[in-house]
Image 1 (tube, rainbow, N blue to C red):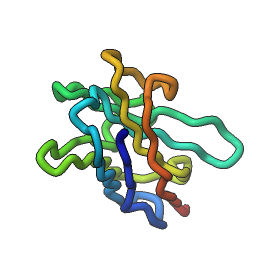
Image 2 (image 1 turned 30 degrees about the vertical axis):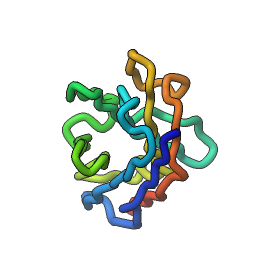
Image 3 (image 1 turned 90 degrees about the vertical axis):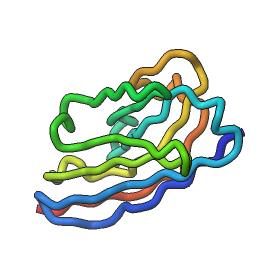
Length: 123
């Protein structure tokens, strides 16, 4: 089993920044892919970014150039640096981990999920 705990959410104004963290524990050696998803009220869950165990990163188009995903393998921590935030970035953000040997911004490919951290961006 893998446990994921997110932190770092909050409320900021348009143009502000936040850094989300996700602490992983348990059988972390099994993780091939780690990612961030978000879900706004009344909308489906959207893949934001992922990073593979080899360091490959992928972002959804709406956050390219503004968000950066990274990981500290020694501390088993995943990060999402979010800059130039917009009101449309407002959502609950979830950390996810996948053990399959395929990685994509599709929630069904991820096996473990955190409880989420709220990000609110006001105009």
